[in-house]
Length: 381
Image (cartoon, rainbow, N blue to C red; front, top):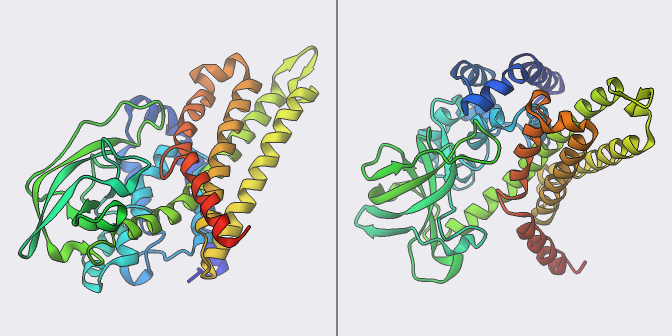
């Protein structure tokens, strides 16, 4: 259900002011500390950002997909680490539960996820399993009323502070995704350990870690859906998450374009602002055009999803185009800034590094191409 127009406008205005007044001044600090300050996370909780996609009956805001994408675009106007602080609760860390959870599971977990009392993580990737996500090796062996869970997950966002993991594990001998099931695994169960945060190219402040499961006893009541449905649940979660990430890419591109235009208007070469030089104008024009195209694709796909239609193809296309687009926009932003774009003072080089990850996680660009081609052939064109 969509919010009424006035309420949603107030939410967007509040998020925009929060990004401008509170988050952007802290970008350099987050980069230096590799952490989002705790008072900022508390403010995010108060604003309801952890529950954007969770139904009001569980304490969330219950935004539809168009509304969620518009909020994601606003949060894209600052360093992606801020959005990541609540992003797993909104997306991949909660949506398996939203889509496939029992009433009892939802009642137990969703109110605390929506409030930000607990942090969630989505544990699919493994040391030897990335794009071929149906080949997970982590195993869950039925033992009476429990499953014994053993394996290692890699590059798990927010794992260092997660209280609840959605874990994909193999429960059967069927090949590929047919043998994979999904489980809700609380962090405090014996046998779970989390590795040190990885040192990354960008997006400092958004931490990823390995998670190890050593014969962890998981109640059978914590399984999401039936045995063998985990891969299908994971793909549905990722379809939705890709659209959200595409919206964030649009927001970051808009930020980069605004910074580029402001710099080009002030920086003078050959006796005039560089914004008056046609080759600089061409880079600005290309960036703006691509950002507008990505925004239109994201919002149209979100509206189609809200109408109840299948958007597997369109979500993959939005993620592919938007993530590749923001990489080109960031590259042009560095070029227009020249030497200033390569040093840390202007923050352009930081965003240049940050956006590179968008082309990899929640499905690489090449995986999106395979999905788009497969779905296009299914539809006959």
